[in-house]
Length: 229
Ligand code: PGA
Image (cartoon, rainbow, N blue to C red; front, side):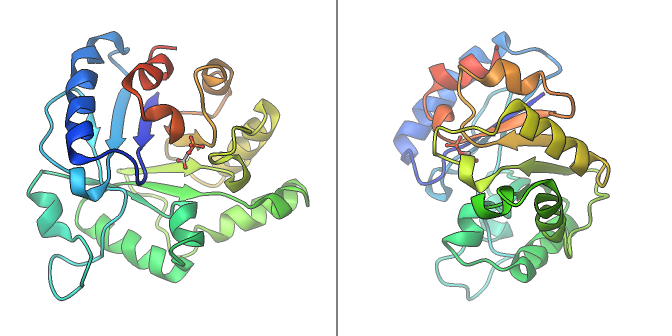
């Protein structure tokens, strides 16, 4: 299983350092075959020590250059960061990243040897139209994306389940993962209101290879409750 923590725009440099230190001490509690990945905000990226991977929530597809406000390869390499989250619905919806922009980022970071956690997810109005609509919406988010990469992980995150406290049901996760797995052969995470009280039923679903967690990852205690569930 892969347990990925997405801090989003939470935590500072100081609180992230405390978190990483506390998390490192507790990595002996996880199953050896499991992996933990943490995505702190860009200002808190650093060379943290521990049995976990640190990744970037976002970056610009260039090594360095005149891109005001952006983070490139040079800034990530300073801390040995080789893992990135691409296509999160908040970047698609709030930051206006089109599929074209996302595909460009994807190709760039793939060519740079990055491990990519690529996020896809449908809005509520699509979910309400049924499985076929969901499938065609989600598969369209693979446009321009090479899904054969060895370092690729996909995260299915229904938008209506993110930060709402309403996770998808076991049936919805199961049928969607099954559909996705008939198209892609890479680890597939579920994300959207994963909490200590629903983690067990979610990781028990066939086709779920891990979870991408926002809110419940912000405290070490609650994130560890997921990792050790
Ligand atoms: P959530 O966020 O766990 O707070 O719903 C998940 C995500 O956006 O990755």
